[in-house]
Structures are given as C-alpha cells and as structure tokens.
Length: 309
Ligand code: 13P
Ligand code: SF4
Image (cartoon, rainbow, N blue to C red; front, side):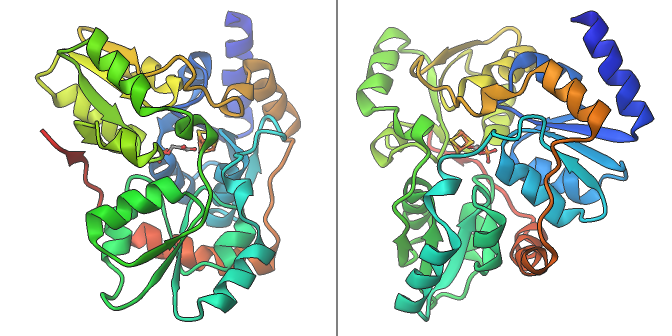
C-alpha cells in the first residue's frame, strides 16, 4: 500500500493534478487526497484550483460539476460506473415535461443531478446552502425542487416557501428509520443526534443538529458534548474520529453505506493518474447552460448549521 501511495504522489506531481475526495469515500482515499470535503466545498475547490488535472474521488455528478466549473481542465473519475441513484431519479425529458406543467415555477436543483438537469434549472444548491439559496428567491415565486423530496421538505419547513417536490430520494439516507435513531438514543442517552437533511422528515424531527457533512464535522469539533449519534453515510466517521479523537461517535444504523461512494480504490486512483482516464466531459451546449445555475449557487456564500438544542 505504501508503494502505491508513493506512486500516486509521484504521478500527481508529474500530471500537475489535484485529488478531491468526498467525505463518504473510504479512509485510504481521504489520506491521499489534497482536499476532502462536502459537495459545496468540493465545487468551490474545483472552480478555483490551478491544477491541470482534477481527479475526483466521488460520484459522477460531482465530476461533471467540476468539469462544468473548470472546462479547461482534465477531469477524471477513477471509477466510471460510480453514479448517484438519486441523481438518476430525474432526467432532462421528465424535467422538461414537469416545467411545462408548472410554467411559473423557479427550478431549484440539488447539486446531485446530471449536467442536463442543471442546464434546465434556474439555480443549484447543496445540502450546505439549500435553505439560504431558497430564501434568496423572490417571496411570491413558487418553487420546483428536484430531485430530493426529503431535502426539499426540510427546506420548505425552514423557509415557509411554497415548494413542489420531485419524488426522488437518496436510498442510503432514506433507508434510515425513526426506530433506528430511537434505538441508538436508548443505547446512548447522552449523545447528541447529528442528521443529514437527506434523511426522512421523521428522522430529522429527532435531530439535535441538521447539517451537511462539513457542518456536522464542524459542529462536533466545537461542541462541548462528548458523544454523538451520526445519521449520515459511514465515511464521515473517519474525519470525525481524526478531528475529535477524544469524542465518541456511533452510527445511527450500520446500513448507512453508499455503495457507489465505496467503489473508488487506491488502484483506481493510480490508474486514473497514469492514464488520465476515465474522463468526464460535459458537452459545450449543456455546460454553457448548466454553469448559470451553478454560478448563482456559488455566488450565494451563506451556509448555516441548524442547531436545535
Ligand atoms: P453533502 O456533501 O452536501 O453533505 O451531501 C452528501 C451527499 O449525499 C453527497 O452525495
Ligand atoms: Fe447519491 Fe446518496 Fe450516495 Fe450521496 S449518499 S452519492 S446522494 S446515493
């Protein structure tokens, strides 16, 4: 393994590459990455890096976003088949049809969407800034939110906006039930409950803190509490334990695993750096439209953590 990580470092320099990794990646991928973050942080890195190559350790929509924001760079996704089932729950023709049915609606797309869907949307958001993005829209405007109905409902409850939800969800987070969290609370009565907004509303109701992955980590770091129940994908445990070595973290369920995020291996990263494949490129006509909605999101710099205690 040491030899492989050494080769990765060598090729990274040679290729003038940067390795970006989502928190849900395996721990060994965190360790070789230049930046590990949430979807918002990774988009910001992709938009501003001066590297010539971006190796994106995540899923396809993230690499596509990087390519839209940095069209002159080579973007590689080490495992071509690493997708996001939630992003695949809405495609361009379905969204076009829905827009015709709701001609006055502003389309807000979660960043977990294809480039084609972004090209048809008015503004993008991530879980870190969804509330602030929706709050920034004119009061009287109705909103079509795609594709995560759980995040959409959470945003509607925070903003009081009239929102129509797409029927999508993240299979990993949606799988978590209220009973799982209640059981974890029974086992760890002193622990605070940290919840990602892709969870069901009845799980969010049990949260002490609702936030994106970065917000969850930052909250745990500065909190006086010593124990936490974590209701998001298991990959977050590595940075939580690394950054808070004296605190205890318990998963709300052992099923909180995103299979697609776990596909990336050190071997795949090495091969991606050597061959500069598999590449992710967004066709110009899609990119030119998709960058408008991403640009609106990135110019809205507000993010807040929803603390309920
Ligand atoms: P964040 O990166 O915004 O926390 O979202 C989690 C996620 O599901 C990414 O696929
Ligand atoms: Fe998609 Fe959920 Fe996996 Fe994130 S955790 S990539 S939303 S399936």
